Amino acid sequence: MDALIEKVRAPYEARLSETLGVTDGLLYRRGNFNGTGDQLLVDALMQVQGAQIAFSPGFRWGTSLLPGQPITREWLLDMTATTYSFATVTEMTGEMIKTVLEDVCDNLFNPDPYYQQGGDMVRVGGLTYTCDPTAGAGKRISDMRLGDQPIDGSRRYKVAGWAPVAEEARRAGNKQVWEVVEQWLKAQGGHVKPRQLNTPRLIGALPNPGHAG
Image 1: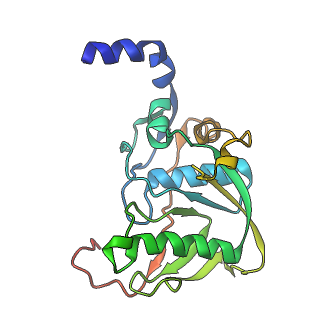
Image 2 (image 1 turned 120 degrees about the vertical axis):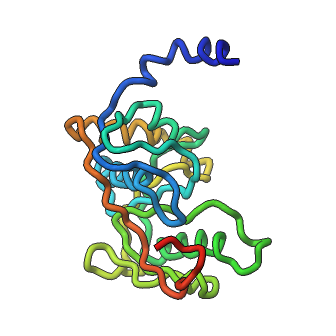
Image 3 (image 1 turned 90 degrees about the vertical axis):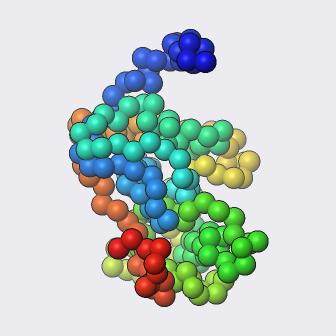
């Protein structure tokens, strides 16, 4: 099997091993609400596509990188490669943004296990919010802000994302997310600064013996 894998990889080895930058901080993907690897993705999506907010799926797979390790193209593909990894930019109202967050939150924290669909919370860039996992459906998300300003339910915001479920988004000629993030990585001058993790303020969930403070 090892020989077969090496044979299949051989034509792509040079591109996969190309260094796109070096991380100055720990990059990981594991956390109920965010990880620094995911933070890198949303930071890149916002900056390259000129968006105010970014969403990244709550995927659980990916390889951690220690400070000083190279960020290779293979690592980027490891974090993003699916059959529907298209990068998108959509105008969404504040009300719709809250609906998206509430919907994912209910998938995770519904008290009925038959309605829990697994995964982690959608990762968010730009936007801050408060989450109460113990509240009822539609009431878990509050105090959504963009900078110091509360999110206006009727106002439209430019939201970047990737891995759209809708088929039409896949046919819209959008770039693959790894192309967008690679563009950002190459613009960082060789080194990627440690990511400042954007996680919600949690209420109603502590103390909890399963929480590592």
